[in-house]
Image (cartoon, rainbow, N blue to C red; front, top):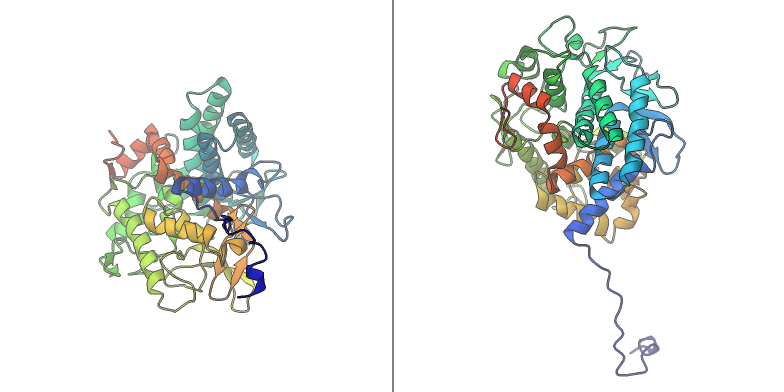
Length: 447
């Protein structure tokens, strides 16, 4: 016996025990995850507009300090609503901040009503997303409008100030000319239009990817609606959106773009469904809860099977989606990770934003990110888990992206209370838009 074992115990009756690290309850750790995700949009927002910065790099906080992302701002607005409801932020402060944001959006560049992908937070001017992408981005706009509907519904019966905010949100989303983006009446929506390059990008919104909500919003518009034909002929490809294949004996249901017979990155099951409730939602092509649940189950099964034998993949460390990534030389890049593009990189948002679909599997991942002794100190930063990491390469990028942070709190809240689903689905225009496209909902009767 070494002497060190005796130094601290001279009394045989000493009952001192080593400190035990407290384990959070499920409710406590869900609160923690939501609070941390909220910090991105509350503590690290763009300073003038109070909207979401495109990115936040812990080691270079000035990078793109004033670069606002339209879709990520929509997700951030919904995150703030969750923060109000949970008591994480003072309601009055949140209302004032949202007022600043909506005032900014009112004055920012728009192109036939659609906002650009990126906006300069200091002056509201478009920041080109690419050489010929300096105009309206209909998909990013639809993510923002999904949030504006929720703002309207949340505050419409509040104080005079809150009702004014609700009215402003209503006017903003109704200003989008969705029908313009059919390029003169074609039976499909187009992603981009530029005053300089017009339709040169020629990107049709054809399923299946993250763009379902764009068709829902376009059909719901009381001012510039599309007919049902673009949805059925364009998005659903005249029925070609369906696929009879399966993975791990789980039906894929849809033909995922670029991954026929498999599934795409997990964000395809998140962006459209922050407001659109898949529970009991169906049309002629799918039952949407089956679709997103199967997407999650296939992703989980893939990571557990781990066909590439990446170190660290497991039933508690899983989830592939678009995020920062590790390049082959060890530098940080970007990749839309999926079973057909697996770089050994786990993106925490993939599992954390899937709670409504597979809560047990997602809770395992949540506890891994926050409690695993080998990873928690490296992985948890100023706004929760960093955007991406690789156990195989012992690699973490100390960076955050708005579009990844922004789905976490809303989707966890939809799992816990259905809050945003209830707000969005009870909007009369949404109900009518869904009816116009041939949807039914047992959770939210449409008529």
